[in-house]
Length: 291
Image 1: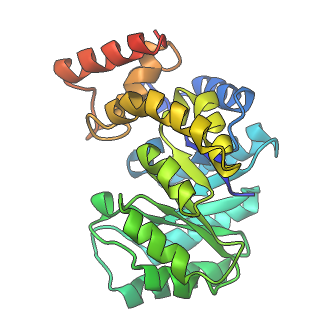
Image 2: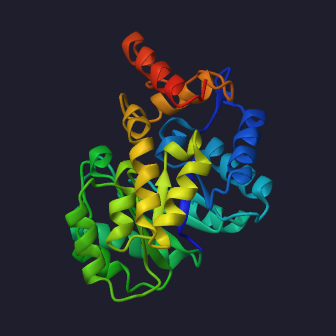
């Protein structure tokens, strides 16, 4: 279920509230363009700036609107284990297909602490759980050995790997004994090489604006048609890079606003891009005929 091109969808904001009409259009755009799954309230969805009530509302709305057409994964991670459990229990209650849990940030737990954190969440629910490793945001990286140990827990079914390290991905894959445990790229530009070593797809920022192309690239790669997958990868590479010219999701929300899909609005402390970055984003979008 959890493979292919999964979009890390943005959360549109208008007048400092979640813009659900715009969000519906984004969900429709994804489902019409062969996206294999929706991740709501992941890092790209700005959960750190949502209230607890907004976070839950967003998960519930996504599940109900998508209505089982494709899988919905709810971002439910926290650096507070009790809070992560509460959010994950809620996601299960409202019918999410899985939950994505970022490694606890700021408090920098040990590997033993990480293991115990995820074990407690897994004990509290039966919903499938996907680990999320993104040390550039959290200040901590989950070790491949810890991932392997956690993979022995039945409802921990995969990991989104955004460490930027193919060695990390390769070591995880070499240690995992479960055939149904999936490794997903957390970096668009590393999707193709990660699939080449055994990954099963991507949780993609770029899918917000070019969902069909990302889906095609991943499908080609999973079917071992690497020549065609490589053509798409190289074509999209400049787009992958422009989406991280500033902190995610600033560039991707800028792209979507320039494409007329959402209002250009963020929650502080995030804000719009610099004029220099904006001009580079506009130039890239024009080159891809997106504006």
